[in-house]
Image (cartoon, rainbow, N blue to C red; front, side, top):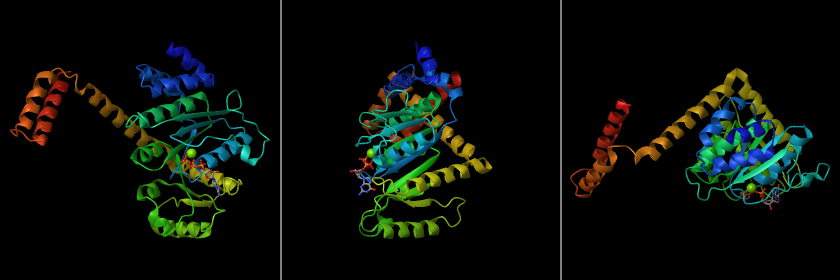
Length: 319
Ligand SMILES: Nc1nc2c(ncn2[C@@H]2O[C@H](COP(=O)(O)OP(=O)(O)OP(=O)(O)O)[C@@H](O)[C@H]2O)c(=O)[nH]1
Ligand SMILES: [Mg+2]
């Protein structure tokens, strides 16, 4: 059953991609088997993340990237995580290519995933979905996340290149940007360049990055864009491509991806241990004693932790 869907996926069937992503989203028990089967067929897609505060124009930029990618005959997968505004389908630049609802054989596959009800599990689900789109045969996977919390920061770590989208704001522009977001950016898009303050926002950001990155091998590029008019999009694409070139030099991409694999293994192992925690053999009787002791102030929480971890280690030794 799973094997059929995987075979269809590897043959480029988008319906199979939808089906498999749903299984991943719903944490189906078939997920490990699916991932085992598709793993050898992943690793070739370029994965590009777009993040930034709500409403800055991430979807509009992704939309334009879809258009550019199609013009280059690239197969594109889009993963929109908690994106609130719909994709229009590259219509902003005119209707030379008609995407309709993106279904069918037009080389564009779009999938939304919500964070609601997925707290903590979303990073795993989105990684799985990225893998599935990679195995589907996408040359390029675009991932949109709203950069407002830790989960989003975790997700953008799973991509090759992070485009942080900002827009002209009031007051001290750089100071108001969240520190975490500044650090993960490989490329900046200062979108809504048609609004007042865009030049100042651009130059402040460039100045800041020159200072912050004076010893780094990669200086994040800053591109001024106006997604609604399609301005600066070619330049943004070129900046993303330049970062990809940079990753391909000196094997940086494998280092980056091995870091990601490390994080993923750690997450999976911890998740598994957490799930199994309540099923460990000794647990039932012992945990109640520990809870009672902690409650009665006979044992503190940290000593309780040490006692339990010591027992788990003993259990593992027996395996
Ligand atoms: N003036 C102006 N408006 C823009 C530009 N780009 C996008 N917008 C508008 O800004 C609004 C938000 O755009 P989206 O692309 O949905 O922004 P987003 O960052 O994806 O939003 P969320 O997914 O809700 O976080 C829409 O009304 C867009 O039409 C631009 O360059 N200039
Ligand atoms: Mg959006």
